[in-house]
Every structure is written in structure tokens, then in C-alpha cells.
Amino acid sequence: MAGKTSGNTMLMTEGVIWKQLLLFSFPLLIGNLFQQLYNTVDSIVVGNFIGSQALAAVGSSNSLINLIIGMFMGIATGAGVIISQYYGAGDEKKLSWAVHTCIALSLIGGALLSVLGVALSPFILDWMGTPEDVIDNSIIYFRIFFSGSLFNLLYNMAAGILRAVGDSKRPLYYLCISSVINIVLDLVFVVNFSMGIAGVGYATIIAQAVSAVLAILALMGTKDIYRVELKKVAIDHRMVKRILAIGIPSGLQQSIISLSNVIVQANINVYGSAAMAGYGAYNKIDGFVMLPLQSFCIAATTFTGQNIGAGKKERVKKGIFEGFAISFLYTLILSPILFWKTRDLLQIFSSDPEVLEYGVTVFKILLPFYCLLSVHQILMGTFRGAGKTMVTMLIGVGNMCVLRMIYINGLVPFFPSFEAVMLCYPITWTTTTLMDVLYCWKGKWMPF
Image 1 (cartoon, rainbow, N blue to C red):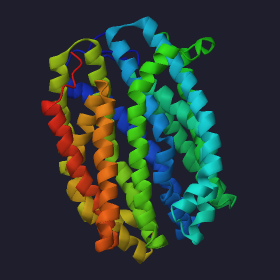
Image 2: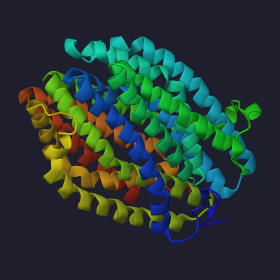
Image 3: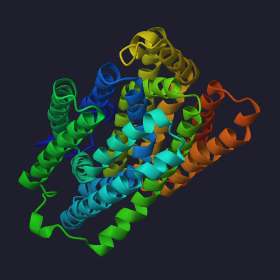
Image 4: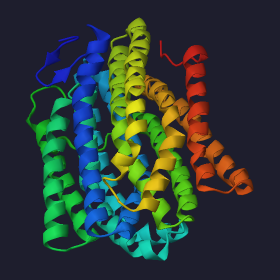
């Protein structure tokens, strides 16, 4: 089975590396496009049928949502690393322990996140300095969104298990189905039933519930060694320690960096709802732009994990350079297109001239630095696949949180402007990528 597909899975321990990375990444990309699509439809429907204040409420939700769910997504990352290594090594017993422990963790985490998200949303939004004309809608949206956290976490964990064994196709199918459901329900709840921003929230959690059920049924229905049996779903304490040892640093990285983005969002909020809406519109477009890079990152993680499990050191190193070539070529082609079509893309979300100007400003500042992110994503995926999540956390947190906050709080007050706030991103992207490259070159990240 090495280097080939077996059913829906793929072992990447032999064969042409760049082809395997692309074949694995493509379903991920399409699935993530659909996921981003239904998030974007939320914004389009809100911006055109409810208003710019509601659009600002949805747009400002990204950083807060990422902050709260970041830890749980990190645990899913740790689980995927362990599962890919066991699958590459063909260790059926430990793989089964890991899979059933992962499902149990997602059930516990989903219930906990629902309670915390619903209870704390108003306090966090107030702390962020959310404007009065936006905060009521924001609270409604956040509370509905977090009430469906169980489905969110369960799907992401189940999809992570499938991807760790090389199956990126079925998560694609389930996201496509849930995306269509979300889009249809958006229009029905908001346009036909006039439910406002609450309708957008309900459409999202119903769609997430469908994708979660489908992913779990796929794990229960397979005959491969990663099959889920409900009677075996339980916490194995030895496996939890391994998952958390890898997953907690990834979760902390995502949560702490998201915290810095919440603080950046708070600085953007100072400039009013137009700035919030413009930045929110940019974020929706940026979400599409980053999807291929994120897909390459996940592919690098699975590829590295499986090959380390199989003891193939040189193949891991070769995969880094072929991953670089793929991701850098993508950004080289896309960046000029985005530069010339920026305003046209932003007009999908709003026709307000002030909102458009803020969105254009963000693009002009950030777009030239996307090539750095192509390098960062490949290296981060590789380090995670090698189990070095603590290092990726230290690099990410040190640059994208600590340095970003030093800049925001120490330098921006001397030349306060929306543009100055936005510069925190390219500055910290540059320093992060430089440290990634240095660690790859000089660090001892290979486990053998």
C-alpha cells in the first residue's frame, strides 16, 4: 500500500513526492474552499440584507472565535500527528487507542466550549471595545455559534483522523454537502423568514452538525485499522499524555496568536464600524487566498508524520523543498491577480465607499508579503509532523504575539493610524519566517 491509495487512504512513504502532496492537498483545498464559501456567504447575506453594522459584527467574530477554539484545534493537530505516525508504522493497536481517545476528547471539549462560549461572549466583546452599534448583534451571533461547538469539534477531530491516514477526499465531500446546506439556510432564514443575524448563526450550526455526523459515520463504517467503535470510545490516559504533549503547544500557539489578533481587532475597532467592515471583508478574501497554503501545510504534516513513522529521514527533507516549490509558485501567480482585482472583490461584500477604502488599504499593505507565508506554512507543517510543536509554538508566539504586541503598544501610539496597526502583520510574518528557516537549517528537529 506504500505510496498508493488503499480505498480512500494514502500512504506517502514511497512514490513521487510533489504529486502526492498535490493529490493530498487538492481535496483539502476544495473542501476548505467550500467551508470558506459558506462563511463568506454569511457575510454577503448579512452585508446586503441586514446592514454594515451586522457585517461588522460577523467580521469581528473571526479573531474571537479563533481564540476560543484554538486550543481544541491544537489538540486535533496533535492527534493527527500521532495517528499519521502510527499509520505509517502500521501499529494497529496504538492507532486504535489514539482514535478512540480523540473522539472522547472532542466530545468533552465540545460540551465545555459550548458552556464557556455562551457565558463569556458578552464580557469578551465588551473588553474588546466593540462599538455600541455592533455589540448586540455580535453577542447574538457568538452565542448561537458557540452553542454548536460540539459539532464543530467533532467534525474537525474526525476529519483530522481521516486526513492523518491520507484520506482527504471524504472530508471534502462532507464539507461540500454542509456548505450547500448552509447557503440555502442562510437565504431561507435571513431573506424569507427575516431572522436577521440569528438566522446566519443557526444556518451555520445546522450545517456543522450534518458534516460531523457524516464524518463519524465514515469512521464507523470503514474496515481499515482506524475504525471507530462506539463501545471503545474512552480516554486512554497514556495516549492522552502523548496527544496533549504535541497538541497543547499547537493549541497554545493558535490561541495566543488569536489573542494578539483580538487585540489588533480592538485597535481596529477604534476607527469605527467602516474600518471593522473593511477589515472583515479583507479577512474573508484572505481566507480564500490562504486555503491552498493551509492545505499544503496539512499535507506536509501528514507526509512528514507518515515518513517519520516509516523511518525515512531523507524523504522528509526532500519533501520540504518540493513543498516550497509548490507553495511559492502559487503565491507568485496569485498575488498580481489580487492586486489588480482588489476593489472588485471587496465590492462583493459592501458598496459603502468608506468600507471599500479601508479594505483596499489592508490589501496594499499585506499582499506583498504573502510569499513569506508560503515558506512558513510548509516549515510549520513539517515541524508538526515531526512532533516538534513546542518549537513551532515558541517561534509563532514569540513573533506573532509578543513582538506584535510590543509593536502595537510600544510603537503605534507614536504614529497612530489604521495603516500603522496593519503593519504589525508583515513585520511579524517576516521575523517568523526567518526563525523557521534558521531552525530548519540548524535545529535538531528530526527525531532520528
